Length: 203
Image (cartoon, rainbow, N blue to C red; front, side, top):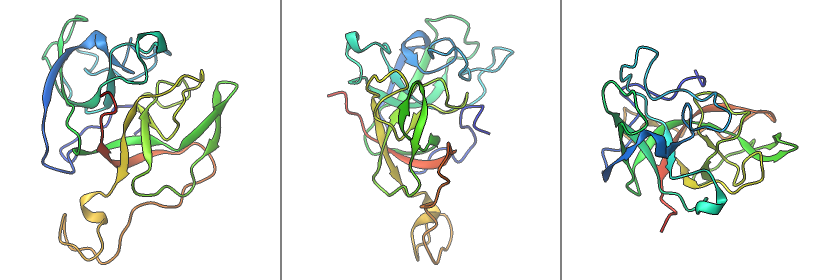
């Protein structure tokens, strides 16, 4: 469901690389109270217990005046148990080349604050961005739009990539006779799981 952050044992498509860095919860977005709309999913469940979610997020502030879109980006690996304060630690993998599964919205542009054009034929290597726009689902932090619904540049998160079973005639993830990367989407807002190869554009 795109109303909760991606979770589950299959979130890692590749086994690395891994560069883990801790940040405070208050410095990652768009999550929960750090989302602009205030409607994003939380990194913990309602009982304040770590629930194993793995969204791709940006670090820093959402303000262009503070350096956006050159934010460091990464995928949430772990959350300090009992997360209750803005200074609780969130562990991110910020390594270039890690491949993870995440919800990605097919929005290309916004007009008057709402999604206006949509990608119908995504391709391997297509950029995806951390997007804090209000119209995306509660569990969706990524889109194909370089600008958010306020016309502010989004940080690069990475590019669309192959899942392990999307290589033709390969044994990765089990035998596969033809690629299954989804290249046909409706001309409307679609928020579905894609594999994303992480790339940091912050430096």
